[in-house]
Each structure stands twice: as structure tokens, then as C-alpha cells.
Image 1 (cartoon, rainbow, N blue to C red):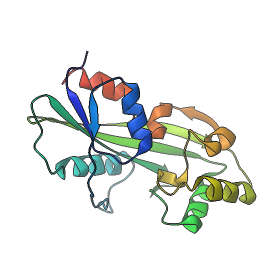
Image 2 (cartoon, rainbow, N blue to C red; image 1 turned 45 degrees about the horizontal axis):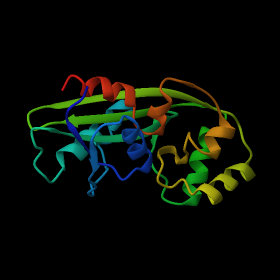
Image 3 (cartoon, helix red, strand yellow; image 1 turned 120 degrees about the vertical axis):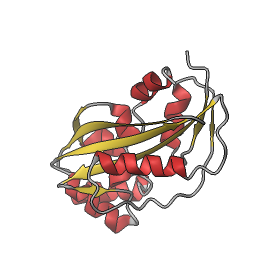
Length: 188
């Protein structure tokens, strides 16, 4: 079993739900981090860069019995990144782009102790069917997906109606590859 307390540095209610499901001792600690990244980074490199950047910005000392967990999830489609949309119009543009295609979801994770730092990532392929503009606007207006990479939640109406299949970890698409994290925590 894992005998370390997890400090989850995330405002994401989905990540908080996933960590809670692992039945580990944890606390949530949030702080602001600039989520910009170098233009030359692609796909998993963006997600791991941002996860490590968040860990390095943690403002408190990490005690011997603690592990800081930071993460970042991105959607990669047509050789570019989709982060969180700024507004409804940008959300519509993102959703229209991913409909009828396959995209990749990368979650980068940093597990930091007072003496080590582990960086890992997971990748899932998500296949989205074509849905109408009216359906996209219904989703945006009712679910307000502005805090989600790629402007959708796999675990809500869009996932129920538009996702055809996934290759990889469902929970990675939600925001944390929990099995991979759990296995890594057992080694720390």
C-alpha cells in the first residue's frame, strides 16, 4: 500500500474525484501558475512541461511523508494543441475541429517528493463522430466546458453522444491516468 500523503495541486474537480477514488490520504492545494510553454514543444512534451512547471512553482516545502502531484492535460489534433477555450466562440471552433476526427489526449504528471521528481505521461486516442452545429451549441450552452482541454468532458453529455471509441485510458481523458499514477506511487 501507499503510505504517503498526496498533495494534489489542482483546481480540477475531475482530478480531485479521481484521486479520491484511489482511497489515498490526500489534500488539495491550489495556486496560480502561468501555463505558457515554448512554441517548439509538441504533444506529450507540452503536457509534461506544464506538469513539471506546476510542480516547480509549488510554494511550500514538501515533508518526508508527502508527494506533490501536479498534472496537465492537452488535446492534440491536426498537429496543434487545444487547451482550455477562452469563451463560447473558441469552444465552438475547438469542438467543430475535433468532430469527425481522431485526436489524442495527453496528460503529463509530475510526482515530486522532498528528494525526487518523477515525470510521466499517458496518451489516449479519442474518435469523435460528426455532430451538428446545433448539438455543439447545446453542449456549450448547457455544460459550459470552458475549464476543459479541447472544450469537452468525456464523462458528460458530449462524451455520451459524440465519442465513438477510445484507444487508451478513459481516466487519462478525464485528466489523470490513475492506474499509472497508482503504480508509480507504490515505488516512491
